[in-house]
Image 1 (cartoon, rainbow, N blue to C red):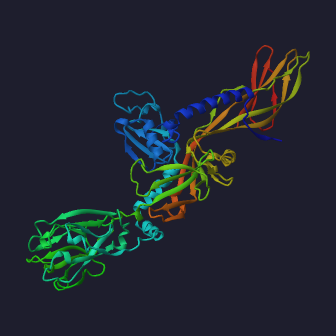
Image 2 (image 1 turned 120 degrees about the horizontal axis):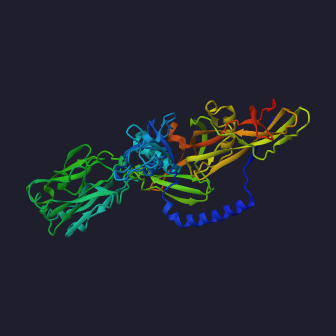
Image 3 (image 1 turned 135 degrees about the horizontal axis):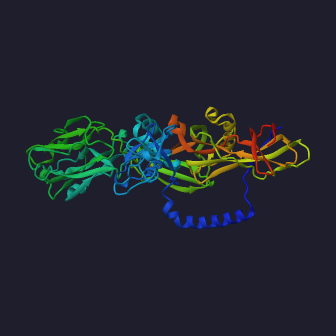
Length: 608
């Protein structure tokens, strides 16, 4: 009965001691260099080779004078792609391996930089009709997720509108500003910060001295609710100089989109003593008004009482007549506030996610939802201890992007097999021997593009069995299902042991001694695979006013926007071939009975 036994690779104690020393040295080096590496994920630098095309869609960028394969890898890794392809100074980022399109290295001879010669695919940046293709290393999953959510926030009006339902609108303020004393002397009379004038209250005309000092109160209101203005500190203001324009019959009006929030007067009580308006607008409003009208103040400002714009309208200017008394203010210009420009705190939340690294450590990462900088300047992370609302990567499928043709090595003696002897005899006879051996082969799972983040791989994850073949697919599935990390710094190897039994009958001539040995021809296949991982978990939006909401990641990202990709190679041995080698005492040799390992074989060998 054939028996396949899988055994984890083990090292001898001396090797383990050496590895511990190397690990300690590496740890010291990493501590010294940690400040240099903190801002980038683990690179790979491995070039796959020269290819005639770089299929699929993705990002393209001209690297200019900084062109190199490593620079292109940095660009593509930073944007979450698994492959980088250079062609001259152009960098192309892709998620599809150029299967079957590999060409000779000689077709990639374009210099990355004009002054520097190149001799191979690693040094050169593609060719006139070819690309140098590389893997990129570890992708910063947290940064990519935050960028995707931020992009959704920036481009989807419906998403932003829906999420505003989780934010409390600013409390509306209605204030009667006390100007009883401020208008009696030189200086400013202002509404409270974050509010705007909607009307004024005047006192009785005293002894025909109808001066501006009779303005005792101002009605001040906060911005319209649709602007989500935070009030204080959320204004764009300037001072309107009316020293000359209001010395005679004329309008004095803030520029478009601005509203009166204060008045400056010099000493004296005449209209010409009003010298400046304080004009402000909510920063969240476009520089334009809504609908406007001229409010008639001819009668109301003649007597004690209020003169106000209609409800929902704000003062933007006043019109005076030729005389110089308070009652000579004849009209207010009143306007509704203009349209929303998306520049309020409600449209500038902070996005937060939590992830767990391959070392088991938790981190919380944040980014401004409106961050549009190429390098994501507002992105930052910190260590946390809570596992609540953590984001995970769940493996969905593994696909073969490409594979090499089986390579068969030259025959070599089977390791640890001792040849058997058929002794010489005076008479010819048939020597029967049963040859038993254990053939060991090694598989290696190597990550070229991965994540410094823990992943979940179930034993039911999809594997493209057709491309792998049933046997290889089963073994690959076992190996990836046992993986909790797809970090480029980790390589997983296993040894497969196959028992083989061969019955050999050799016709031994008289007076000859025969030695029977086994030869092995190793067969290897290298698979290029892509792993598709899907995001599961939650993210949080928080606003400067203290409001926040936690949502399922599937409510903002769907389809391929939830997917992250890993890429690597899997060295899987094909079924090795064994041969029986018969040698006499004179060195004459004969090979017979070639067969696949693990299959019983009855072998008859005629004499030499």
